Length: 390
Image 1: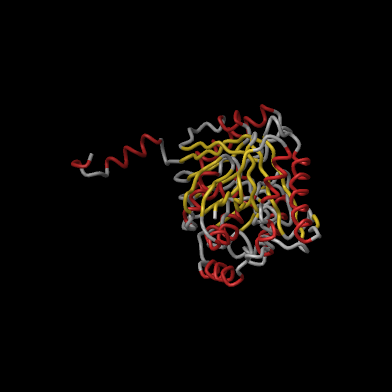
Image 2 (image 1 turned 45 degrees about the vertical axis):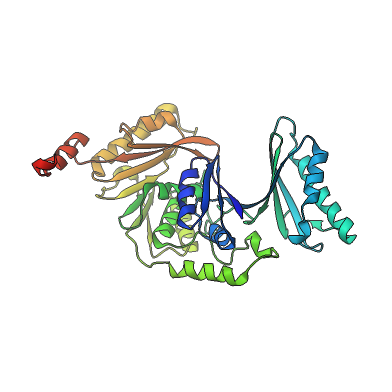
C-alpha cells in the first residue's frame, strides 16, 4: 500500500526519520507531508507510534479531470463496496488548490453523489453520510487538475493526545512539541528543563519520548478499526510490542513558569498523562533560576503582539544574558515567532530551522553554551590532543 503522512510545515524531515525507524519504504518528503509504502502492519504502527504525524492517508487512486462530471465518473468507477457496506456511513473531506476548481464543498458533494449512486445502482439502496463518526472517511485532494483519492485511516487529528485537560494562552500543538524534542536528539539520558513551560506540552512529549511511551493509547478510536480489512490480531500484536518497549527510568525532566495558572494547568495535564513520577513542576521566574550544567533547555518564550516592541526585544536580550550567566555547558533550543526578538538573544545559533507555529512563521534555534568563549572551548579541546593528531 501507498501512504501519505501529513504533518506541520518544518517537521517533514523528522517525520521521515520516524518512518524509517518503523520500517517504511520508498520514503519521499513532500510539503507538509511524507509519502511512503508498506503493509497493514506499517499502517497500524504509523498511527500508534508516529509522534510528528497529523493524519495517515491510504492512497487509492489518482487521475486528471477537466470538469466536475469527469470527477463524478472517475469516483463512481471505484469499487467502494469492497471498503464499506451499504448500511455503513461515510464522509468526504476535500482540499482544493486549483484555479479551475475552487469550491471544496461542491467537490465533496460530487464525490458523495458518485459513491451514493454506485451503491444505489448496485443494491437499490445508498449509505448515509455521517460527518462526525463515519464508518469510512474519504479524503479528496485536488491540485490544479490532478485528483488524489485516499482513505483517512486516523480519524480525528493525531495531535490530539488526550492528556491536555487545561490550557494557557497560545498552547503548542502536541505534534510540534514532539518534533521540537526529537530535533534536539535528546534521548532521556540527560536532564531537560522547560523554563517557560505553559501547559507542559513540551514536557509531556519529552517524557513519552524518553520512556518510549507511544503517543496514543491502543484504545483510541482510530478510523481503520471500522474498516472491513481491520486485522484485530495484528493490531494487538503491534500494541503488545509497543508496550514491551516502554522503559521505567529517565533523567530529570523539570518545568518552570512564573504564571500560577500555567503551573496549575501543567500539573493537571501531567497527571492526566500519567507522568507525575517523571516530571517536576515549580513556580519560578526563569531569570532568577540558579542555573544548571550539562542540561538541555527547550522553550517557547512569549512573542505575542500584546508586548511592545521595545519590551519584547529587551525580554529576549535578558534571556540571552541569563543563559550565558547561569547555564554554561548547556544547550538551549528556543522557538520564537518574533524574528527580530530571537536575534536580540545576543548569541549566534549553531542551528536554525524554519517552522510554523500555527499560522506564525517561526525560527527554532539551537544555542550552545560554553564556560568561556567558543574559541577558548576549542583551544582547550585541541590542547588535550596528542601533537601527532593535530
